Length: 492
Image 1 (cartoon, rainbow, N blue to C red):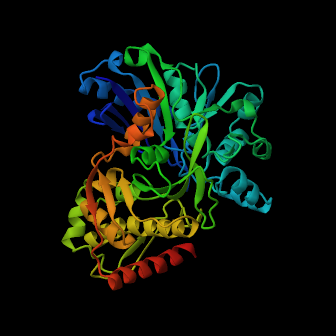
Image 2: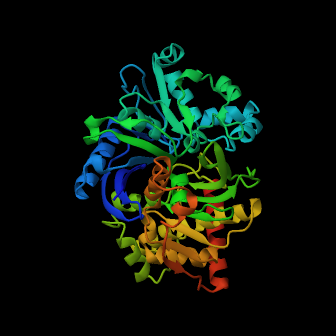
Image 3: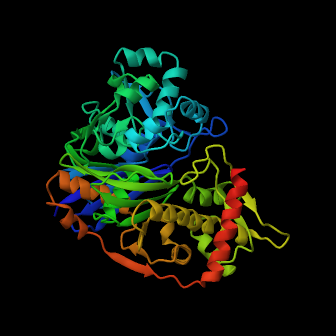
């Protein structure tokens, strides 16, 4: 039997899963880690923790499957996107903490970009919007604020990468400095039509081209993991940013097919085929995947706070001990938040608002408000934010008829049903909800020529349950109106 090892390096944990070529999960391992918050709106991670937890999860997953590295045909990597790392080309030592995609420290820089008239150039070239979310402003900040970094970059001694690039570098002992087209398309530096780094944007950000990785297909040769890490040399043949990997893992291979992933954030993505659709609703045009040099595109709506809001309930307010308790709380109050709304703008609001300076807001509380109401409002905020994205997609592309969902939060049946009710459409949950890792495995299997094409990959996806909308339209509209009023308050 052939096996694929999928490394899923996320914002709050590193996972590894072993898949068979039938799509079955044979084992998994996961290690959570904490983020670092040096200042208001700043979010960092220790690169060594990213590396150690990923490697430990990989070793534990192989051990749990009772396999050795010699039993693995290929490695697929999927990763938190936009998170920015820089390291010494000679030693591999990271020269600053990773700056996480949620980080807002470059908000003023982004305002200056608007003043400089860069909006049209950025949108035309990259398909993205000007926002601290993306990698380029983070990298420019590092070059300008870390002593000696710009000099090292100009002398060719510095490497930049998103998390996929960093893991590839570490796994191959510095033999490969590369990324895939999906991750490149999230840097604010990549021309998604020309399939090349943009000289115009590099000049604007004052970023030397020599720090950038080579861009390859999502299923391609990324070298071999050195035997010292897993016990044998294993080829790395599949790479994609987490949301694009989830689109692949949900088998959304045809235009119009849509998925939404609920992890730290929430990310809805619709396949637009070989057409690069330009959004008029502040959605992002991005590379969905690239195979044999040909890009498939997508529209994406990015929400910064979904599962992280539940983590906040647990870690900061001590309202729950585990995420599973949120479903119990919602059912205790029959899904009624008692008029309470939470707008989880802890690090600003993403699509379709893109308000970097917005902050979280709770409104509608009375003396009758209890912990279950607040927990329920937190879950509801995830569905309401998804509705905002689906509405925006309907304006830019063909309407979404059905949504495939994945990620840790969709184990919550109550949330999935509330999603269907608010969206007024069927919500389909797959058998394997770890579709991000499954997508990485599919791409690795393609890259290693263990499966021939996407049609074969689609057979690895199966449905577990479909949630149909049942809520009365009048009640649903009342809830959505209340949400919109709460968002307006948060935007003031």
